Amino acid sequence: MSAGDEISGEARPKLPRGVRLRADEARGGHVLLAPERVVRADPVAVAILERCDGARTLNQLVEELCVAYKGDRARIEADVRALLADLAAKRMLDL
Amino acid sequence: MNETIPIRPALESPLGLLAELTHVCPLGCPYCSNPVELVARAHELDTAQWLRIFSDAAKLGVLQVHLSGGEPAARRDLAEIVAHCAGLSLYTNLITSGIGLTEAGVARLSAAGLDHVQLSIQDCEEESADRIAGYKGAFARKMQVARWVAASGIPLTINAVIHRANVKNAVGMVRLAIALGARRVEVAHTQYYGWGLKNRAQLMPSREDADAAWAAVEALRAEVVGKIVIDHVAPDYHARTPKPCMGGWGRRTLNVSPTGKVLPCHAAETVPGLEFWNAQDHSLAEIWTSSPAFNAYRGTDWMSEPCRSCERREVDFGGCRCQALALLGDVRATDPACHLSPHHAMMAAIARRDSVVVGEGAYTYRRMEKREA
Image 1 (cartoon, one colour):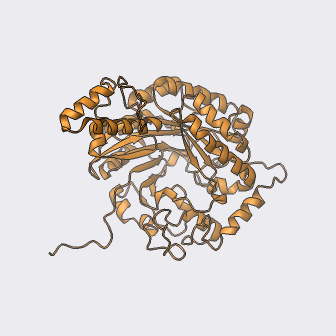
Image 2 (cartoon, helix red, strand yellow):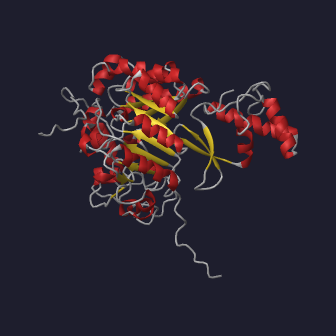
Image 3 (cartoon, chains in turn orange, brown):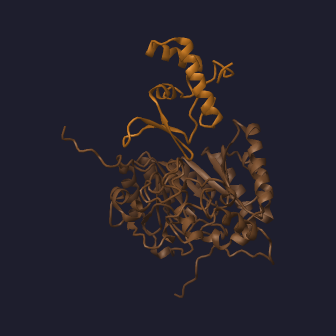
């Protein structure tokens, strides 16, 4: 079992209030801002987090990324689940 | 081929700005991080001056602003300041004692776009908490404020500073934070600067109690994962390696005092001979790159041994300058919290001496000096 396997495919991940993804004009790239935290978000994380709007399900999100990035589904799903599980444990994402 | 090669890597912009909007605070916590010389309300920057500083900070690349004090709710323009920062996409964090906030006030801050509230508690037992704060009724008010914040939807962090009077309740304070709906709790063993240093003999817990509190809170982590995040700040006097104070001097954050003085950390004014610039006279970018105070202990060039050749020199940056000064009288010395400092044993000796309860142990509460009118 790997990280995030326990999350339901029907979960609708959402960045809670107090956690924001934004462009970092001064340093380039994107950052995730949370209480007392600034986390650099790489392009993969940005593509995932932009879709964590509380409306899409995890399954839909993975499907969209597969179409957009023409990648291997199992690999993409594993990346998504790992990121969501990590952020949820830090209370930076609601599932 | 005629590109100039920079001697040192380009200086990154600061990530955070801590604004001490005011030094006015109804509480008298004996470990307050404010300087011993407090600024009277009459000398505080006005609204327009603060708004200009926040605009300047956003331009410099600051991402998060920490609205602090004193008690920031003592400023009538707090919601206006929050709205201005939100308009600049700055992440706003309110660091408050809760005293002075009302239900309507919390709603106004929420509507203004406040991102996060950090509320202090002094203990999980009312009588003890009010005694530590030097303010009767503080605990009950804080419980009320926590409920208003939770109801507003703004995420809440509870901050608990640990010392002799509450060291046995560290776990209780984490549990209280969970009950209040906090997503995050800071359990911070007291840092002894300014007021904390003045009260060290009244605040220092025994080594055994500090260690037990540390272990008990660490043991809670697994149980509370996904419920609350614990940020744990170690007791300095019992440490082996020093903390990377402010993430390194002039490296990640800046502090603005109620009068607009820009400091590398809240205690920096204790360092004699440093020249601080005021945000009224210079842009934050100028201050960040060129002010003497920010460049004094930036990087590693200022270090002597054992820091200079240490493999951790860019991990902890030699620890805290203000602590080296306060305890050794030498601002360039290795922080004695480090086991490589020749004076490391002194810290444990002070901790041992100060943890012994002598007499009544009355606090010197943090109070603003009343000046003759």
